[in-house]
Length: 87
Image (cartoon, rainbow, N blue to C red; front, side, top):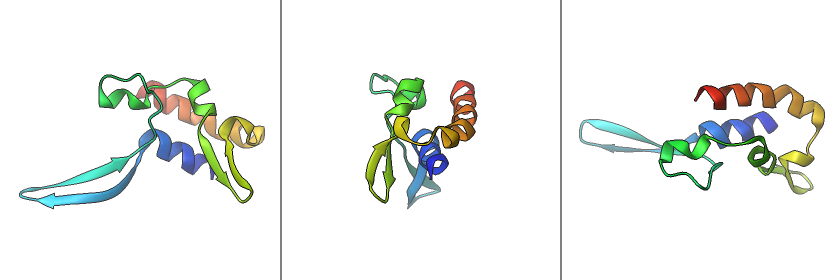
């Protein structure tokens, strides 16, 4: 679940498509990880502190990513950071 939430936060998920004319346009929803952005493409440029603030739904309610299992984070965060740096 952590990997899926982080992937959606950074890369986004296609919510729907607009069809018209010669082109179909994907509508992608992602989390705004950089509230000070100027260019919309900069919303995924972030810091580790911003990632720690991502809310994660659990059976017992929502927690912040920073409070989730360190073992799970150690698997996911290095790959995610590599993606962010290379974006």
